[in-house]
Length: 139
Image 1 (cartoon, rainbow, N blue to C red):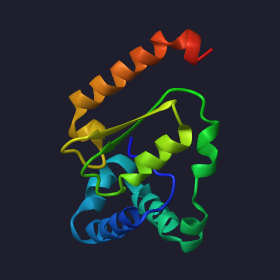
Image 2 (image 1 turned 30 degrees about the horizontal axis):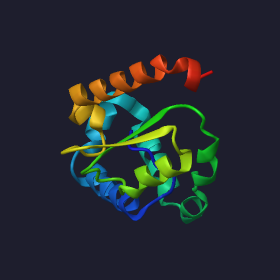
Image 3 (image 1 turned 90 degrees about the horizontal axis):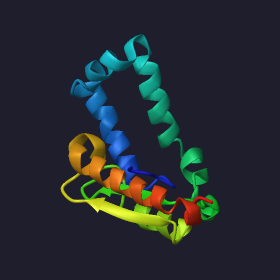
């Protein structure tokens, strides 16, 4: 869900905006509940990596996608504020016939939180299909 194989412009803009929200809109306080005293270190480590120009230039997982030889469902919300739709289409193209694209309508970056019932149904149906084809797909 919400997979990335390169640092696209929407992802980077979203991370910059998250920094502003972290400082100005109480995101830090929400994260404190989950990360405690490590909150600042974890947030800035995440943000600093993504915004590092060297990381952005070198992050390209595309060449490894054709090595994937198992069923893959690539899910992204059609309103994902952190990733362009091309993330999904390039991943699916790179994996080939093993991959299935899914764009969840009216959903942002966290389909499992924003549309939990639909996400669960999609993943469950996909797993049933993959297990049903185990003898031909998974060996």
